Length: 571
Image (tube, rainbow, N blue to C red; front, side):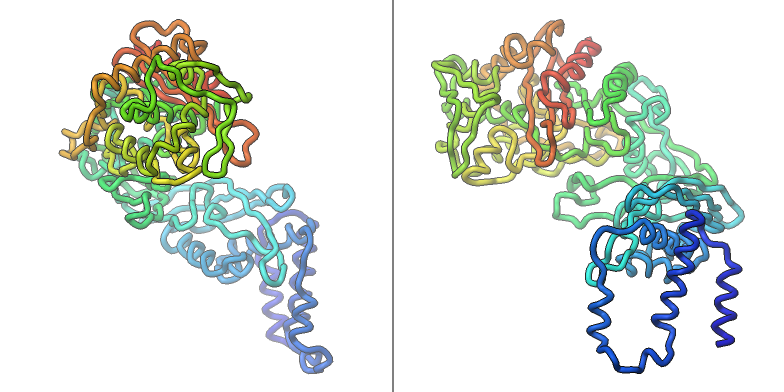
């Protein structure tokens, strides 16, 4: 017993991470209980109960108690602070993954002398702050950040454990990511707008993720030299899943650039010119400011140059990487297909009943409206769902997919914008899902960049792949579409969008936007949301734009004013 008392004394001399005086008592009790249960003695050999019966009695269930939450958090944070990686990992529900990342915290990230201070638990969630030092050779820098952990019951025995995710270690980590300190793999980049002015995340908060992407793509090509930094190294998805790491193969919604968290020494940046317009970028930032679910993209229709991109929430570039059902804005693509196939004509009568059933689903219009003896123009302008769904029996399963790819350059995962993007998804579907895709639901997924490009294609007459960095900078090849719409189809589609901007669901938002204009509204239902996502896509002259406000409701009321304001600003 002497050696055990010595070990216990040593443990008492080591300062634990503090959650609170009550928690400290709980942890001490838990530690003693664990020793009494597993530490040996006559009770282990009495044979009075079988091991399986004893194990069954230990299974815990029901809501976690406050004591279980605080003691589990205390155990994890204390072990981590003391450098006991195995002990900290054992306090989680995925010891193997936790051990790997926590080992890398000291070994790869070079983080030492970490101290953890827990805040007040909120249910099963325990926030905590971290203060540490990052050291690389002779260079050191202080590190401070906030994180949080959640306690859950472990599957199988019900024991309370930390629900393991990489974000516990640092909030910028996603599962599979790593923290690494060393010479930066990519030198810093000094990004310039189209006028030669420097672009910074301080001036344009929405561009933080864009700047990360530019560095990831062009850091080694722009002529800079790397510094020493602590950075998040992203896990790369495997090629062929639509989320591949190589932009030449397309960048999926899950592909996010590495991120610098702390600079120990600055590198020398190279310069890189972009297509962004400083005045329009500032206007876009203003339009989404305070609107967390809002994202917008503005581009030049005739070239594909991206003039502005902004997101109300700055942690993820929804405008480029979002994968959301576009709702009725997709009817622009669908209408072009119906016009080409002579399944619709602008001024001819077209059915818009209250309901239409297809593939076992019953579809309806917003508020169950109908248009009796109306034209296709009226149905498009009012965004009649059944006018499009009613044509599903006349279509092949791959018709919409082929239209999106061949005319609008979408869903081929081959855009080369200069930073990671999600290039739209229009999968081949059948029956009810195929019908739903005609109105931008089902498996169809887009983002504001994709839908701005749709309006740009209508305005310019052909697809021009959007880009943020000119292809002449690195000699890359831009994506192309295999064909264009006929002059008759293009003219009809422009007439539909122009009429909608003047007299349809887009009229209120587009009021005061003069010149050659066209627009389409949309709202997309999302499971679990009380309000649909509001969408709006439009063009004015040689400028096209699209935006989304997640959980915003009708696109004309929410995303519409954002897009319209930018079209006005573009002159």
